[in-house]
Image: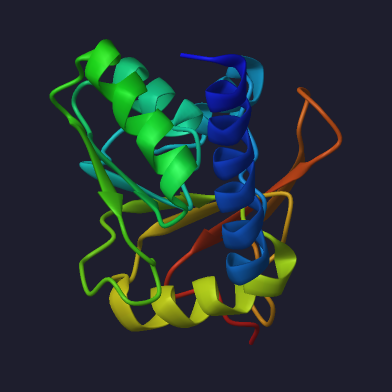
Length: 178
């Protein structure tokens, strides 16, 4: 591959990331292992299925699949470059309990399971709340890193040790004020 070919490929990849970041109102952010461990600690022991809305580069879903082989883990990502990278990483991780889907979580009509995790731009958090209100069963847990869901009442708001973010913890059925 020539230097020009590499440069063109890099420009295309960066362009795709930029276009989808603008379109989705979100830049895919990695999750460091310490942050992943903190999030995993809040997944209840009796959980059977976890879904990550906006799974990005796959850091968190792979970490959950490794830490909880008893749980079915699904990552949903629409941006093609992070999705492709996460697919490659998932193949290398070889976790049979991990599924990755390239889709818009807003348009994907499926049961999100017992726990939903997300680290999504605050401009999209209202959509997260709308989707979960329609599709998630009472008793389900939502763990949102960094941003609250507008109009929802968290049962916990925990500062993270791994950085400046907070975890917002919600339980379906008691997530609305009053």
